[in-house]
Image (cartoon, rainbow over all chains, first blue to last red):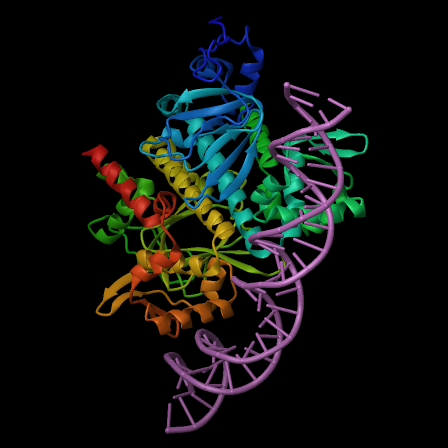
Length: 276
Length: 276
DNA sequence: GGTCATCTTTGCGGCAGCACAAAGAGCGCG
DNA sequence: CGCGCTCTTTGTGCTGCCGCAAAGATGACC
């Protein structure tokens, strides 16, 4: 307890994490993550005590596709993108993850390699645990393993929904949906609308929805003229989210259930309710 | 023990399942499913004892999209397809499942609805358990909950791989891959090549890979002329799988890992090894 | 064996989105 | 302040795939 977090080698392994008194924010971060939902305070302290805090600079890889999956983690601060690279060099951007979200559940299992690279798009502080340690938590706190399953089920539903969108919707609809999703996980309300606080190039958006940067650029220009969005370089603000929702098409229950933060927020609420 | 399986109402709920002496095949089915991998015989008997056997006719729905997710199951005989229907009526075929494969892990959790319909493409016998019962198994046999997580992780990787394929590959490649996959889960070696033993219309294939039946038909015709495949109505035989593999493109490690039967077979082997 | 529903093939026109090129704009940095 | 990198816009041609239509093939069923 009370060990200092500061680290002389910011690129490498961080220090062991101190108690919640020294770092109440770290405690809040663990408590806010769905993997540990429903755990009582002592258990959370146990979990937090086993964590290390890693610092990753912009552009650095938090985990690397193809490496042995040995680490489970939760983003404490910063944002990262999940990217798959095909052997012919094409990139697919699966999704962005932000503070309090976890990655690498796969590390609890043996013999897996990471199927994707997690790249910091901002400087990140990452709480991390060896995979074996996560497996211990599964055994010690059965709730955690249920939570993990819960999360994987939700992720699977999200992915299925996006798979379906890719098959049935066109670029315009997918882009509208992607912007709304991004605004919900990384948005900030300002005077003139809702600003997406991520650095998003047209190319990133294209990789995210499966299109070319040219098509994305054209579509955004069109929307800008229509007054739906307003964009600077790498910044996008939604001026009329309702218009985008309409363009995205009727958002059915399936897609509803697939909005990650919503579904997982609900999970948190459920767990807390069960606990109370 | 020893209760008769035969059921007077084939469309509806089946009877409670008897012991392994009366139905060694049912025992083998449960033992072969990855969810129950690594369980000792008594535990498997416990599991099997809680099962019901349901009969579903061709075209019948085993579970229905939108219904409350209350049942977990394993296919004992027959095959089924997982389908999502969008609110505008379009169908997406996610995958086929065959004997000894499970569905509805989601039923172990509360408050979920099935995100897809599971439709029997052949008459099916389905071992099934109430979701609450599966949750009990999680608590009683921690291995089972780990297995469940394992399976979801693999499914997620598969789906990610297919998502990526959809973004980066074209119809020809996706079709080649789909045929190879189908051949691996539902294929049979015959004199002239490998026959896919599923009834597959051009339209089904189209829904599976995200294309139109016209494009699928054209592509298959082309391959038939080239001698790569040979097709009757609803039957497809691969005469030169190697040629299709080449068309599918270099099959990288990622896609390797995503071939469901392989990955799960490996899981079975691993578990047995651990056990032994 | 004939009938009929269903599946399959093939032709043709259209278009959404890709690919390349080249010019313009924003922003950091010395 | 101006240099230069990166991101963005816009034009043009192209093409893979769709969408419809209509004819042909297959197999089931009476």
